Length: 93
Image 1 (cartoon, rainbow, N blue to C red):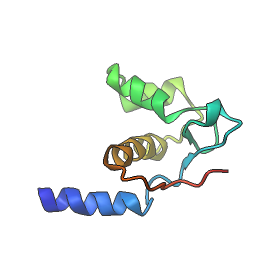
Image 2 (cartoon, helix red, strand yellow):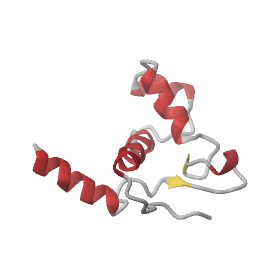
Image 3 (tube, one colour):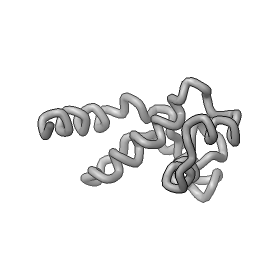
Image 4 (cartoon, rainbow, N blue to C red):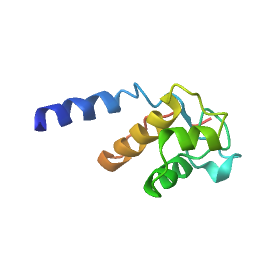
């Protein structure tokens, strides 16, 4: 189990799933957003913490892609931040 977590951490460090996350100083106060939209990573995480399902989030925010990759990218970004050692995995525009 620990080895799996370490492999996942290495994968996250490569930014495989978080390429959908953008940081632009002029949007949402420079907070991480999904694909340059004004949908913050924190918005998605707060919806999940409130008990919303994937389907409910996609229904409320139809601009998110229905394959769930946007939602998964937000979760992956948050997971990376929990492990963060000071490196950035997204490009600041």
